[in-house]
Image (cartoon, rainbow, N blue to C red; front, side, top):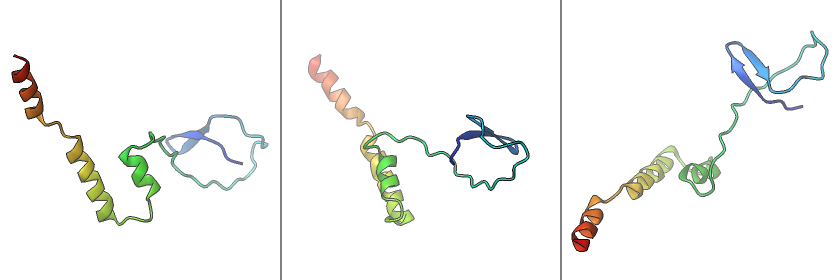
Amino acid sequence: MAYRGTVRGNTIVLDEPLSLTDGTRVEVTVFPEQKRLSKGTPDTVLNLLAGTLTHEEAELIRQAVQEIRQIDTSLWENNIEASS
């Protein structure tokens, strides 16, 4: 059985009731819920490659993405000058 819930201090509050009687002993293995990643995002790609990349390789990919996403303000300035 797999259940989802939320940690509140030392207690896990389940999203749905259990079909077990009160006092039943259970074994619990906890995994933080995976955040849903958008298709094609760097985090999704790195998540898919988990276990195949070294930490350094993953960090290089993150840095490259940051550099690509930086806005070159000179492009905006050139377009403003051209339209004036």
